[in-house]
Length: 383
Image (spheres, rainbow, N blue to C red):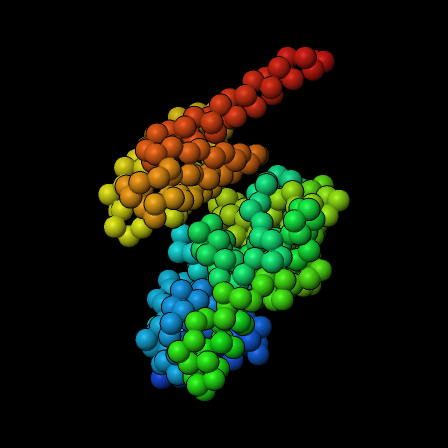
């Protein structure tokens, strides 16, 4: 498939037309039941053919105290919508910027389909430029892990803190034994809430503080070598219906690769000379800080754009104190995808702008170093 063909692919070419939906007056238990029965992560809330919102595992887990009889209209989120004519690169960008794993497709204000990350992944095997990328080039190295005897509450807290969907589970000798994700945690939460609704444990402390990760994790874990191709990852995800694959060697986790990482690759294939930037982890009250950081990032992109071609730049902010001005260090994780390479960096400081400056400086040094290596190789090559 040529670059032009890919840029002509639209939502119509990849969307799922077999829609599973709930109504606004359906209860949470019904929504969870449909997601589990159909093995999907989210379900549109529809009334008279019109999309009102979306219910997902993430949405429900963030509202831990709600009873299963709560009406869907009281917990749904409001996803962006795409048109049937939107390109797959535009859809990938929409998913990245909004954080949604699936987006409804509408025509004349009526829902006609839904596009998920899984639907988009099928494109990767058709793109030669993406087929040649190895796992090592895309994975996030040195992943955070959970121990098998950690509790579900601890797992939930770490997953939210890191803004991820799944994490490797290891023994205390650091050998991987499984993977746990939001879907697995939701099963425990759903079961407990159903018991509370029936009055079996009403008034008692949540038992998820006692349930260990090893009792609900997926085992054996699905792993891949760092030398494998991206297409191998896509095949594993499709075959095992998972969104995260652990990169391992001698049963020790070296990295992690997610559907989000692969969607970034698709977004970076866009023809226009522009850079997609995502800045996550800031609280809603920190919109002014977002603007200041974005301005610095734009200056950086303009500068490095003279020596490479940036495509996608993602930065995640984690503040020990809960927000950048609540005390404690701020840790930034950044990944820059260029036309030919991927660069990773982390930085930590009590001042978020100093941390950002250090992160950007690290990335620029890496890019310049690669540029010098290529120049040296060109000088030494026979003419």
